[in-house]
Image 1 (tube, rainbow, N blue to C red):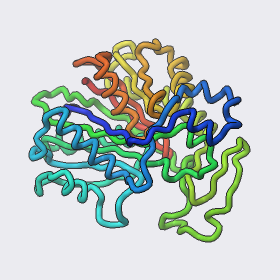
Image 2: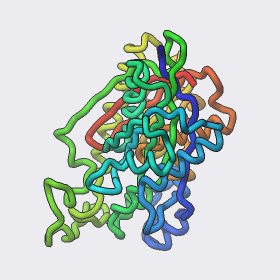
Image 3: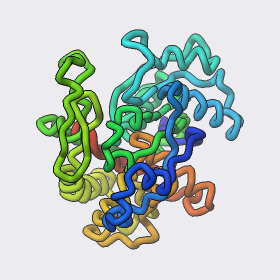
Length: 337
């Protein structure tokens, strides 16, 4: 028994945040030519009362409708996010009820960022190939913009909110549509992408809101999101090419056998630098960040779905996917669409 991706749908919030809106907030950034290299023109931002699970539920309902999925056949729901409804219970349990899934359905949360989709695929594949489930619903959702300091120019330019619903199903084949995985972690650099205060380790306190400048005009504090942009750029440029080669080797494939490469959509400059470093032809590298920004754990499934809808990624295409970021963590695999 193998496991394959059967269908993908996604949901973006209603509120659009264009570059014109961004420059209205930060007029001094109009002269920053480096922003043009990132190739981001628009993002979608959650409303004040929307939470991550709301986006996930909407993406799942869209999946059921678009692909005529029988929700009674869902055996397990996995929710990957960084914002959960409650300290307890598990948000995936509340999602199960909202979606009207069977009471025989399992439900778990896991907290991961940019590599979350690839990790979630591995969990789903394990559930299916262990003969525990036949259909697993993987929900990835990000409302990271809610954590940004109002004066954090860099984060507000890069990121958008969004969610994706991916159905992974069993296939009667010894050759799984989801191939072997490679994982990596460097927890010693956990503070490269972080909200320092507000969790169990560092509760919110009177010092949490003391602002600091990162030297590039971005303001943040310990109660808001922080990313070492240059540090992450260097980490990815060093780590991702090796990750791709390890994944090809583990799956006994060569670079030229892959039809498309869908990397976590960080920004165009970084992903294009990786492409050039690996000598991958431009037409085989997928980019979709320009209209939605970096949607964290949902960038890969949204990119795949968008290219499927355009007719570019067709049935039986071999696609290498790679996620990397928060943790620091990274993971990759190869899927047959």
